[in-house]
Length: 127
Image (tube, rainbow, N blue to C red):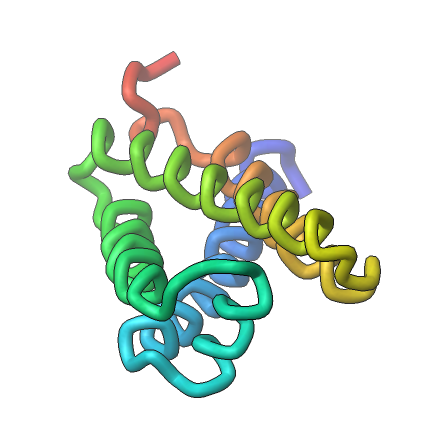
């Protein structure tokens, strides 16, 4: 397999997995699902934070998947990164087990993979 094809495959796999995480997560956040509210309270946040996070997640995946949003895509990747770093720090702060902390760490790695492997025409400035 040639390097360009490998890069493209890696991009779509990581981006697809991030989308599979963001869409249901964003919907559950917006709907204030009881499990989401419980997690937010456990982490010390108000329930309304879920609505903010949910809207951000859904808008971020639209910006990442729509090919003509170069600047918005950069902001979307940044927002996802801030969300995941916040989740990691929040879970560590309340001393959650590493088995819980690993999920946002893995999602952060997939987000980094998607960002790094995206095609030149999807970058803010073509390389």
